[in-house]
Image 1 (cartoon, rainbow, N blue to C red):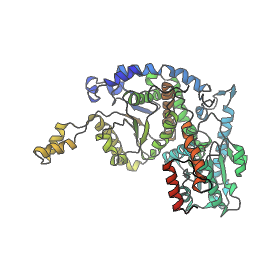
Image 2 (image 1 turned 180 degrees about the vertical axis):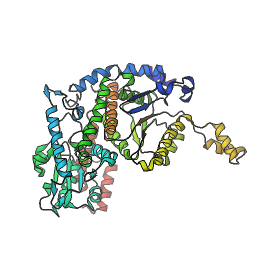
Image 3 (image 1 turned 30 degrees about the horizontal axis):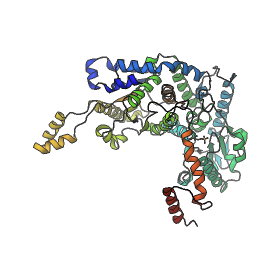
Image 4 (image 1 turned 60 degrees about the vertical axis):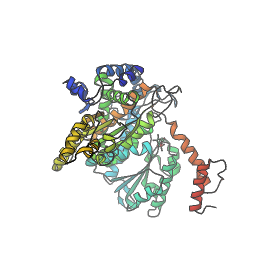
Length: 532
Ligand code: F6P
C-alpha cells in the first residue's frame, strides 16, 4: 500500500493522459457481460495499476475459498454463499461436506409455486385476488427488494408492491392508507424474525388487517430463517420461506428475501435476474484480473480512497429506475467494509471502505453537483448509464439523459480554465476588477476523476449482473484491506442503547446515570408527552 500511496502523491493530471496515449480509452476500459466499464478518466497509469494488481495477489485464492463454501466469515464462523442462491441447476455447492443446492432449488421452486398462485388468483385474500403486497423488513430485508422492484418496473405484471421499513409509525400508516386489507398480502421479511422495527410493523399490520378480515394470519407469509418465531406469530410453515446462515442480510435478495420481486415480475423474469448474476459470478471466477470487472472496480476504488485519500465516492445512475441503488449500495458497501479492524482484530494500517452516497442523474445535477465541480472536496464519481431505455416513444429523452451523463464526466475531467472564464465574462460585458471577480466564479479546476459503467438496457438479467458486480467488488476490497466483509458488529451498540432507553422515555425506569445531553433530550420528550 505504501508504494501505491507514493504513486498517488505523484499522480498525473488526468486530461493530458489522453494526449499522451491515443489508445487510453480502450486500454483503461473493459467489456464483459454486456457492459463497458470505462476507468480512463482517472489518474491511473501503468505503474499505479501494476501496484494495485500486486495488492490483489491474494484475491484468486480467497475467491476460490468463498465459492467453495469455506467459512470466510471468520468472526461468525459462517460460509458466504449468496452465490449459491443464483447458481444454475446442476451446480454442486458444498457446506460442511453437504451439497446445499437441492435445498436452494426446492425453496426457489416453492417460491415460484406460491408466486404463481398469487399472480394467477389461486391464492386469494378474504376479499378476492391479491392486489397489493406489503413487504415489511429493514436493511437487507428491504433495500434490495425495494431497489430491484423499482428497477424492474417495466417487467412488473403482478400485484403492486409496497415496502415498509422504518419503525416510525408514519411509514406503515402512510403505506396502509388506501390499501384494501381484504386483498393485501403481507410479507414479513426478517432473517432473524426478531428485528424490533420489523416486528413492530408486522404487529401493526396484523392489527390493521384484523379490523377488516376474519383471519389476518391467512394473508401473511414470512421470509425467515426462524420458522419457530414465524410460527409463534401465526404464520404456518407452508408460508414460511427460509434461508441458511451462509446468506448475509445485505446479500439476500437472490433467495426468499426476493419474494416481493418475484411476485412483481414473475418467476421467469426472476430466473433471468438470477441468471444475470450467475453470469457475473462466472466472469468473476474466470476472467483474468486485468479484464475482471469486479476486480477493476475494487482497484479503482482503492486508488481513490486509500491511495489518493478521497473520503467518499458518489454513485450517479443516469437511470431513474436505479433511484434506490445508492441507498442499496450504502448498506452493501458500508456495512460490509466500514470497519476499523482487520479480520484478526488488528487496527487497520489504512482507511476502511469509503463513504458511499449518490442520487440519479439528471436530478443530482440540480442539487449537489455544484460541490462536485467546484467544492474543495473531491468525490470520485461512478456513473451508470443504459444505452437504451424502455420507452421507445421517448427516445429523445434518453438521448438527452445520455448526453448529460457523458457531459458531466467530461466537465469533471476537463474543467474550465481562468482564461476561458475570462473570455466568457468579457462576452458578458464585464471589465477590469469586476471581470476578474466574475471570472473566478466560473473556473472549474477539473481533474476530478470518474468512471462510467455503460450497459445495454436495464433488463432483469442486467440488473442481476450489476448487483453481483458490486457484491464482488466489495469482496475484493475486503480481501485487499484484510477486512471481514460479512459481519456487522457496528450496528449493535445503538440497538442495545435504544432497548435501554425505551422504558426511560415512558417513565418506567429512571434515567439515572445518563449523560447530560441524553438526559435533557429524554426530559424534553417527557415534557412534550406529559410523561410523569
Ligand atoms: O442492520 C443490521 C442488520 O442485521 C442487517 O445486516 C440486516 O440486513 C438487517 O439488520 C435486518 O435483519 P433481519 O433480516 O434479521 O430483520
